[in-house]
Image (cartoon, rainbow, N blue to C red; front, side):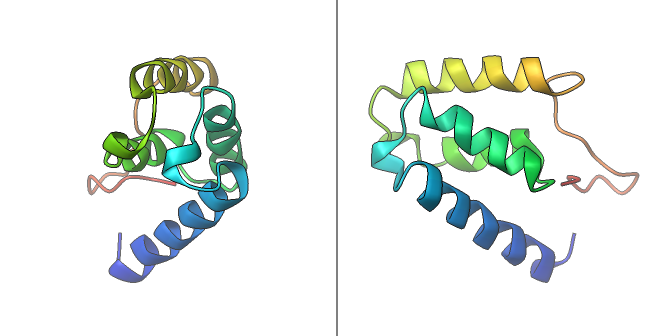
Length: 93
């Protein structure tokens, strides 16, 4: 994945976060599912999005529950609950 692609995905995830949660501090068990759904609808791997959210877990109140609900969403909405990779090892979106 090129830096340009990563930047584009980063910007899109930030826009989705802003629209669904407002900020990391406002992430809840409910709106995190909306965030993941919108990532999925925008063809961004939800596991990749969750990993990005997890990098900021110190800012998210009740992270343990938000994380649990997020992982349940991932397991229920992706084929294996794991990240998709191409032959070169790049995360697919």
